Length: 427
Ligand SMILES: *Cc1c(COP(=O)(O)O)cnc(C)c1O
Image (cartoon, rainbow, N blue to C red; front, side, top):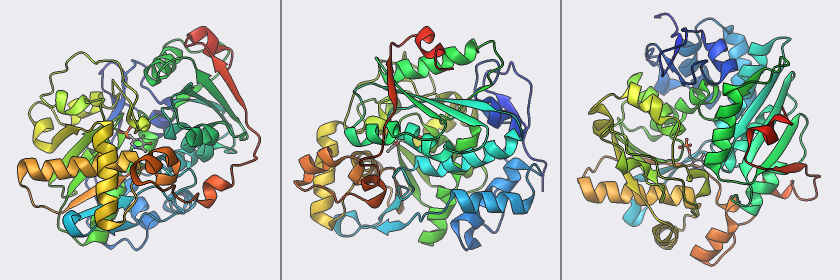
């Protein structure tokens, strides 16, 4: 096995560090994002892993080196990945399209995969130290991180979300009281929340508080997110597939690109955005000025300036980006129309984010004529978006146990102005 990567900054002004350091730092000291200095090969036996945790150990080991003993890593991913990730085949006009349901974890979005794994890796890396995890969320990150980290020894979580811009269900998931977690409703947009997090990192508090981040900028979430691509392909029995990724901050897409560079056969990626049309706009690699984010039904993807683009530009330089990735932008009307069309034709109930992906793959197939079987990442449970499901289908999805259990639990949240001073009081 080749030596594990060291992690270097996208901005090139920070020293190369081992995984555990990159994990606890979050951002590199120069403000860049950590990327591996080389991509280790996917183990040859990836198709034969009997369970998701077994695959996780195989996929992650080359990236972590000998930092964790095999048994320690095995127990950690067993605990983190304790829920199923089924692959569902659609029929009729959607024949050849499979949906990878990543939303069966405790907070009902794909973010449980990365956040739960990251939380346990972080606790392992901390030893006796303490850490404050600072996280900006446009909806699902905050609850996954809060749930994933709550009660982990030595960790405090401060989460920021844009006040009034997440759904009622999402908000309840964010603000239920959890040990070691403080929720902050910021009077601003998601981009303001992200700006505050970056500002806090640029000027960390003096009194020895160690800050880290759990956005998809963290390698601790990014690497576990590679898992679902080989998992889906192994389950499908397909040689290769087009992967369609409903995209916001481009964490999932970047993880898929890493898996692909590590040797996973992927025909092409489709980045399906909502009206925040980052791709197709910037596929040439030449970046146009980022417009501010706009609010949509698929609000966890309302990102104007995706952080992970900085990584993609390094991983897929020049023309490689447009060769590997096709992009499209799906507005709210098309999102609702797709939810309806898929339900009418197949009975499948998709949430708005997944619907953006389904419409993305439909357009890709129509535009390119590429008949390769497709796998659409389904990023959230439809019950997280009952208003949109009601509007599109005229029915309300049944409430899963994980949500019903939140009713009546005590909540804790503070509203703050979108300034660093306001945030400081909570660090
Ligand atoms: C976070 C999120 C996305 C966007 O994922 P990125 O990795 O940030 O591109 C899409 N759908 C849902 C439901 C999400 O929570």
